[in-house]
Length: 244
Image 1 (cartoon, one colour):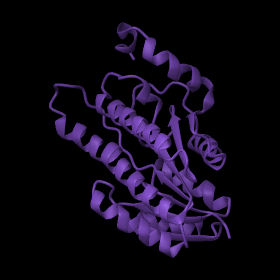
Image 2 (cartoon, helix red, strand yellow):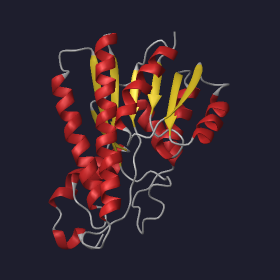
Image 3 (cartoon, rainbow, N blue to C red):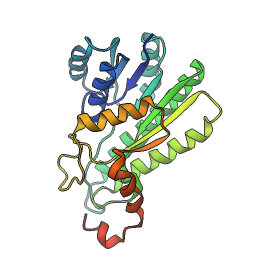
Image 4 (cartoon, rainbow, N blue to C red):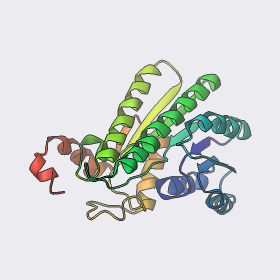
């Protein structure tokens, strides 16, 4: 039987492209997102490639709904081998400028929604006896950047949470994968004034799909130049970062 994968935030951006890659590789797919029509359209597009496609409407801000959705999808697909906590937002918001609600929303989606997805996935994996959790963080987790304070904080928080889970599941048949993309061309970052080293979504998400299949613990995506940049960012002087 083919492997199964659930992807949150599957109707746009990285999630949509990952769904396309895994469909082409013959996976059984569970696609979740807030827009039912977009989910159905994507499912229809992928039905000829994937071994099976199911959809479920899910807003990860509704954290109480997440366990039930994962359980339903696991039942429909006869188990879930991989859960990708992908749903996320990025809203430019400088501190002290009246953007608190945007900052709060960022934390609700990127941190609480992702953590709740991870919690439900780990509980499911323990009952199954196996599974892989994939968390999508960012190079932005490495350093606070101007106008992106809440986003950087959210990705740093998720990164540390995944590190903790990796320690806690070390002796179990559970894989924790963290992927930290640089600039991959999606709606999430197209409004930014600068996107250094940006790569097409098709290319970036193929790398991500390959890394997921290899069950890596952590990777910057793409590896070059972000493996280097990710280590330089924390030590850059504030005067340089402030100009980014």
